[in-house]
Amino acid sequence: MRGDSEVRRDVEAQLAWEPGLVDDDIAVSVKDGVVTLAGFVNSYADYYAAEAAAKRIKGVQAIANEIAVRLPDVDQRPDPEIARDAVAALKRSLPTIAERIKVVVKNGDISLQGDVEWKFLKDWAERAVRDIKGVRAVANAILVKPKVQPIDLKKRSRKPSCGAPRSTPSI
Image (cartoon, rainbow, N blue to C red; front, side):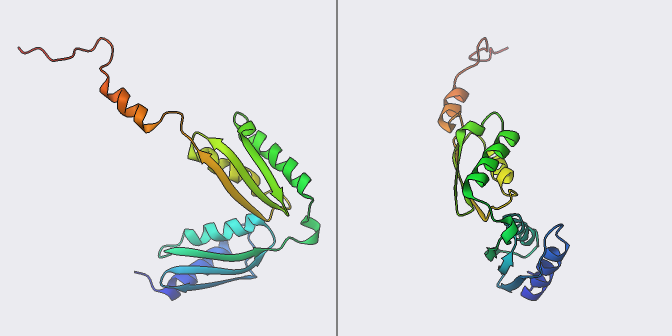
């Protein structure tokens, strides 16, 4: 098992190398493999990038992300503008299912609601909106509801296929 000081050093190095992330105001501490990220960043994209960078480090057991997003005045935007941009981003990224995802914006915080059939679509929806200017946080409340239920698969596997012999003749 790696020591806390080694994990801390590697997390700090990863943050420094993360493209586009200004890590000057992020402090890292580690105790028993639990990494605490504290400080502030200028965008939700940076918040997410810092957390993702820490997750990539061997020896990280958990992350307490206490980073605050402090948008510069120039990046402050009204919620209706953010909401319109979020809807447009979803339509670009997920044109076949965008209408099933509802966007709620309050004080720059986006909440995604609705349902999709696959987890990768849920993740893709969040990815589509996290870089929008003015976003402070994203809460992804999209439910994953597969079309085929596991019970259906069990029933289907018991039915013999058409034309297949029910028993093997003995020779």
